[in-house]
Length: 264
Image (cartoon, rainbow, N blue to C red; front, top):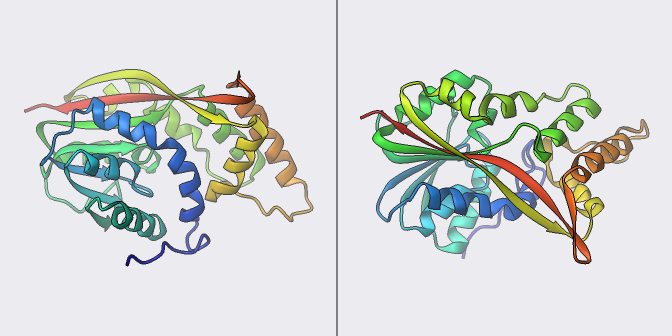
């Protein structure tokens, strides 16, 4: 019998609540592993793994998977998912800016909208390249500038005083030009991708995001009006990327998929 995942409020990210979002974004990780052409038996590292989407996608392909993240709550959920799905992964606490692995340890290094948020962009890029063997591949899925998540991050920063400006990470990692500057000694190929999330309404998805994205969740009992303003800001951001879909809606989440090949 496996142990249950942690209580929703055990970390700043509220990992179990975040999994509500991560589950809907799982197709991005499956697509990334397909693009990276991961093969059974390869050594794969998922950096800033959160609740394990990319790690588990690689494990489904028969890879020997290691996952690393700073947040212990996220790692606990990843371990639980690994046990429930009978997909073995090794899980470690670690910083994307200082990965606890030797040089050239992995055939492939993955990150789905994770490593891009480490504060030191240059150090993170160097670490991803350092632990990947020459001729291997670094496969990334990063949110795109001007996409729905970029607008959502702008709304969060505007309506939650003191919150980090996550749009800076989108700008630093979300274009081909910026990635080529971050990995000057590697071959960088990219493709614009999107995931359409289906929901009963834009309002319903905005509420799901509000309650599940841990660092952004305001005190809903706050009488100052912060929660009301944030709700309106999120609804505008999601609404900009929403189309009718029968009785419901689809919300386009644009991202950049990249495969970076370090020089032999």
